[in-house]
Image (tube, rainbow, N blue to C red; front, side, top):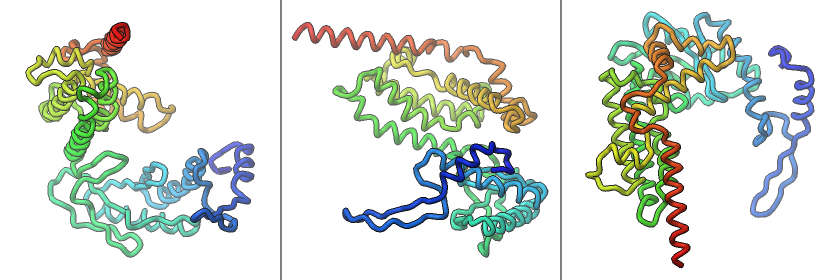
Length: 339
């Protein structure tokens, strides 16, 4: 903590927080004798994740200094190493050096890695699978032939995110089927049903969509947007209880569900704004406006922040939602007066 420049008051507080800890086992109503705990961090404490990340921060400087060209990526206890090379053999060699240094640091620092969960992914333009391997603690790790999951995003070897979209759509349709019973005649009101569909179906199906959406003029992603629009149409029918022959424009207005393309544009704009709002100097900010595909998409999304023609029909969904609530309240009052 001193190396990271943390204030002495916080260091002293941490020193008083960690020692003299005890644990007890409770089994079938019987409480065991207390035992001293000298390792690890207190489970369930809000400060535990912060202390854990602080403790692991040393591994990144250690590995990046020892192996030129290696960069560390992490999220709490998920650690990965990124290397670039001219071929898969060069990349595998760098990853091997990084793994060796990381294991040595862990042995000195009292940290243990679960090598059974270790994976290797190779991103390249070629279609053929790599035969290179990375030796980690006596185990040969092959580069994944299929997509690799990292923080909820499925990354295929060519970074098309096709597998990710397929997985998220499948999860969204599954969630919608589970919620179908809530939308029956004796189920939730349309307003509450819309909230459930937005929170449980759309959030699942569109997770990570800001990474693959390229706009409504690119044919490669329009097909995926149409699949999402089909899902939105199904949600609208469940929310309103309308027939399948109901006009889609009327259905969208009555359900207050925004069109898929409008939601995709909005998600990408918010994603770009989140990147720009990061602390000054953060390398992630360089993604917006970079000379890459996603950089151009984000720059274009932020530059065209107005309404699109396909979103005009769904203008001001909050107002529509309020109208549904007022209608529902009026119906409840009318029934109360009759009784």
